[in-house]
Amino acid sequence: MNILSSLQIINIDAICLHEDHEPQRLDKTCKAIQQSGELCHPPIAMQMRDGRYLILDGAHRTGALQRMGCKRIPVQLARAEDIMLEAWDHIVSAGPWLSALKQQGHVYEDVRSHDQPAIVTITADDGSTYCLAPRNDKAHWWQRLEIWHQIVDSYSRHGAVTRVAQNSSAALEKGQVRVTSPVYTMAELEEVVLAGKTMPAGVTRFKINGRLLNLKIPLHWLADPMFDSEEWESYLSRRASSIRLYSESIYLCEA
Image (cartoon, rainbow, N blue to C red):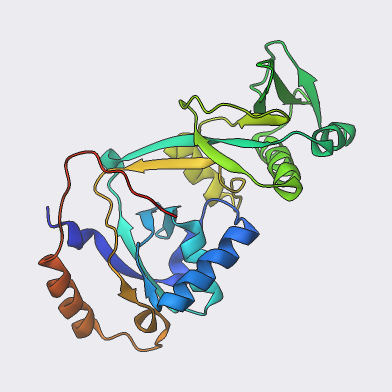
């Protein structure tokens, strides 16, 4: 398979997102793209059954291009067999956000198993674990989703959020908690988006084989009302000679 054939230019109006933005991260991403004048890493997308394209990875890059008024966006279309959907754990400082959240009456603390799955599970720095469950045992999925948004928004406003893989053994510092979210399937995620809803910011984690990186696509192509398809094809031809596949493990410093 020619990996560059998975790269498509899509009208930005045909793009939809499955998760909220983190405001500070969006500002940082927008500034970085504007300064470089290039989009280094194309977002990863899949086409939904209604014809629109769902961004799987790259919500903040997509949001930055939307903010800058771009007319189109380059995306790498992923095949279903190359996608694995997981979830990020969030490490945050414990604080008044948790007690304030419970006082709102939507959730309660539960150390036992519950008729409904927990909205999130929280691990404290002393190793104790409990879950936040909806007070309404018969809460519909969209009500659970709204409460999940409230939980993530509460601690995101309180301080920095560190994402870690759910199978990692990251140690908690004193005063920190680890928030574990449920893992959705791709079918469930698509249903959320088709219903006009989104996931909370930074909870979905996609592992995708064959990711295209460092393409450095000129920003002016994406903002120009007229798209020059010949210039795009010429760009792809030049890039084809510099694509390298690394099969061994790579450690990338993203600082």
